[in-house]
Image 1: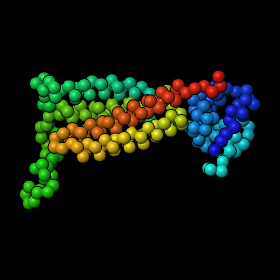
Image 2 (image 1 turned 180 degrees about the horizontal axis):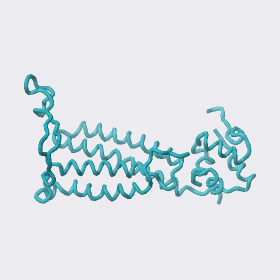
Image 3 (image 1 turned 135 degrees about the horizontal axis):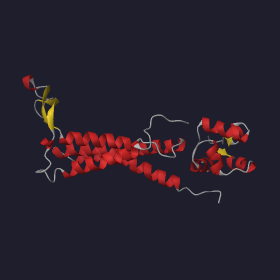
Image 4 (image 1 turned 120 degrees about the vertical axis):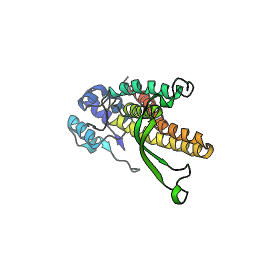
Length: 66
Length: 167
């Protein structure tokens, strides 16, 4: 699974730290998610969806290997 | 996400304050056995044992478990219980930045610790015999926590010093 969180953040001019504070996780967690090292819970994905104002599947994208 | 199976953060330090003195007592006591004897603390308690060392295999009257309320030397028992409780506190105290990724690290570290400890059990069972094996099993129980704590803290260290991709 890949993601466009970095792009969505850039659109909102938001740093990792600011996004982290909005969804109550640490900055390193956002870093791990963006790097594809960690797949967040549905809860966290929905919180991001609320902030970005887009459905979850627009910034988390399934790959053929998934 | 709120997790509710962890102890508050301060339990980590309560755990260390409990573990260090009792671990020292436990491991130093055998060296100074004239000062710290097992009967240093002694009181009546329920005592369960076997009639003979090989009690489960003997026949007739010799077979089976015994249970009695009697005076027992409890110094080592108290040390082991205190160490177990302390390690539980340290292992499962909430981190200040606890979130779902830290929980993910906990699970990863726990699985790793169980695998490593199983290898220890196999090696210990194969090579240690007699009284040494009893000591080994005791150590083995403690090592599960120690390996988990070490692995988890290492993973946390790597996680926290993670490079900031924004710069």
